[in-house]
Image (tube, rainbow, N blue to C red; front, side, top):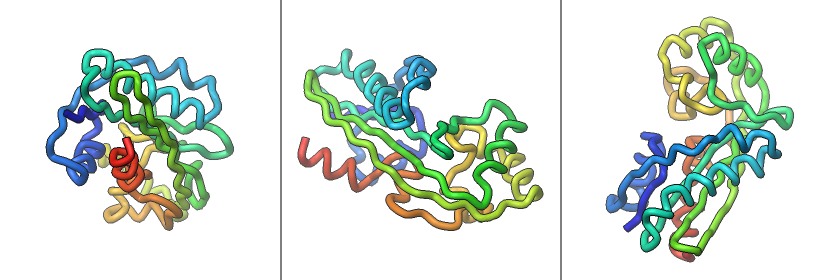
Length: 183
């Protein structure tokens, strides 16, 4: 059995493109202890700890865990703490390029595969009206970087993506499919 260690509805939806036969079990690790690490080490550490937290109860199953961060100016931009923070983040990203890193792990017993996927995202120049309307929608509040690529159709936030779009959503499909075959 495959177990997805994520409560993200976006990851669950993308997982359905790989298989419909999986269970969801959510890890409740403390992510804050990883934030003193470099961005890549932090995202890898969180994904690995999430996976091992679930795997210890399922040693004969494949556990897939992932974590996604937004990095600009070598600083991790997490989920906004409130609407004012969301506004600050969106203004910071406006008309600039940042990197989205997703680390994912496949774990079965003692066997571990881990990978980090990077995508370069360039934002359009966002005016205050767009930012405020987007925040009012509630969508930015549970997402790293205060945005979701999938919201672009309604809000025209993202100008371009170099790399995996599914990575920007938080679950790099092609890389995970390949890793599962090799695992």
